[in-house]
Image 1 (tube, helix red, strand yellow):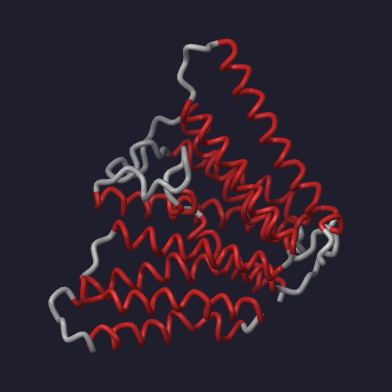
Image 2: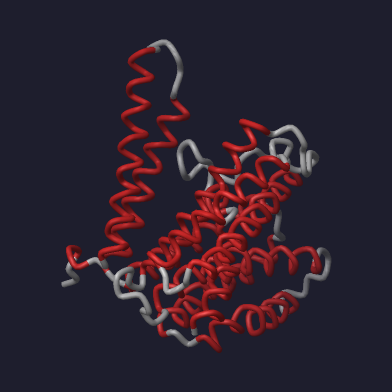
Length: 313
C-alpha cells in the first residue's frame, strides 16, 4: 500500500499551503456572512465548497500513486469530452464515430502511463485524426461531413490530447527528489490558477482598456499584463522548489503559462459565445462545467509540458 506520509517534502508543504488558503477563504466567508446575514453569498459558498472537493480529490489521487493520478485525469478527459460534445451540435449519424473518439481516452492515457513519448505525441494528432474520418465515411452520410469532422477532431484534441499532458507529467523521471513526480504537476496547476486569479484581480482593480470586448468584455490589458508579471515572478521563485528548472527557466515557464492561460480562457469563451451559453455545464456548483474550470489548462498543460520536457529531458 502507498504511504501518504512519504510525500516529497516540498510538494507536501505546497499542498498544505493550498489547504491553508482554502481554510482562510472559508473563515473569511463565514465572518462576512455573520456580519451581513441578509446578504446572499450562495455563489461564493458554492465556489469555495467546490474547491474543497476538487482539491481533496486531486490531492488524494496524486498522493496515492502515479497510476491513480493518471486514472483521475483520464476520467476528467472523459467528462470534458462528454461536456464538449453535449454543447456543440453533432449529427445523429456520428454516434458510433463518437464512441471511437471516447475509446481514444484509455489508449492515450496508457501511452502516458508507460512513458512512451513517441506514441503519446502522435497517437491522436496522426492515427486518431486519420481513423475518425474513415469511420465517418462508412456511415454513408455526407451532409455536414466537414462540420462534424472538425467538431469531433477538435473536441478530442482539446479535451483528450491536451489534457493528457497533465498525466504525462506524473510519468516523467523524478529530477527533484524534494518535489517528486507530483512537483511539476502542482507547479502547473498553481501557476495556471494564479494566472486566472491575478488577471482577474489586476483587471478588477485597474482595468480600463479592453483587449477583445466582443469575446470577453471583462478582459483588459491591465489585467492581462498585471497577471503576466505576477505569475512570471512567482514562477521564478516556485519553479526550483517544485521542479528541476532553475529560476531563469522558471521565469520563462511562468511567461508561457500566463500567455497560454489567457488564450485558453478566451478560446473557450469564444465557443460559449458562438453557442450563446453562459457556462459549458453544471457539473461543478458555482463554477459551471469541466471546461469552465479547465479552459486555461487546455492550453497551459501541453505548452508547459513540452517546454519542461525540452529543457530537462
